[in-house]
Length: 371
Image 1 (cartoon, rainbow, N blue to C red):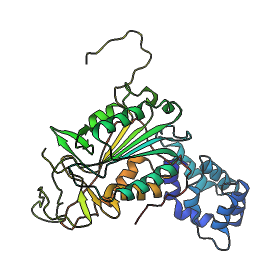
Image 2: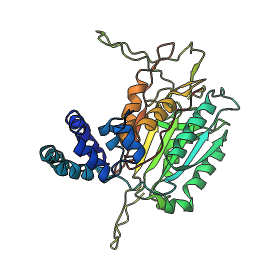
Image 3: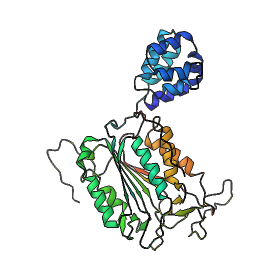
Image 4: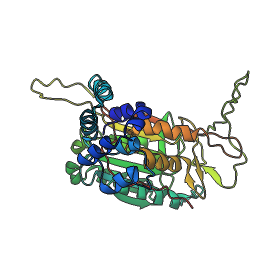
């Protein structure tokens, strides 16, 4: 069921919850096989512990229209007309095709041990949580540990050239490392402290360099600092803006940042072109922190972004698109604070033309890996 129809069901949930107690309607729901037998018993059985409207929203693309038929057959024509009219009058969002098997390929690069920089503690928890999440979302997952700069570039270049991209609907790149900013350009560090610029990483997957992913979503997550600034937040209702950007002196024992610890063509007019794409499109990029700022991780539970990302997608991937879920992630991020009072919020960039990771999935619930 698409998101708009789910919104309609939830909007009229109080009314529908009263109507579905009707014996005739219950019989018709069973007749139309909207639910499996086990789900039907969980909703209407003697030990029912599920809500009809909530479960209806988890069903397939025909569940809404089938339920309209049930309402009409049960002579509940008024509410059936209301639901149908709201559905007919809405402009439906467009979703990327996301039903290949596997859904796509996911490359996770994790740098923990460095030649010069401090080790990044908590990486194992991130690795386990991310692997579990993306596998349950039906991605083929590849994890690479502790790579130097040139090795990272090689891995990404080879990954971007996968011939298998022809047969899948998307790809994910998730990089966890130290990072920083150099002349307004973000970079991540190899274990040898070589800088690998995010701009160059994304360009490997643009429409010129990765034709097999044209019109397919390319999703990037960067768990790395983007500079030296720390966000101490703003005190609510304060007359003066209390924002301090400085180098943190006393990081709490169980948390640290991913700051690296050291300073810082002509247009060719073609007469015979059937269709043309921008150089870069269909990219969704998530940074763990704001520009110029450090990002945070917990030594025991993993990075702040990973914890909240896994938690949110696990719960909402059947209901919302990725952009909406990232809003939920940030609603969790703003509640986090280090012992020194440092805050963090994820930063999202996208040039997507459609919605990503929507209700089209019918997957198992994914548990966040905690230790």
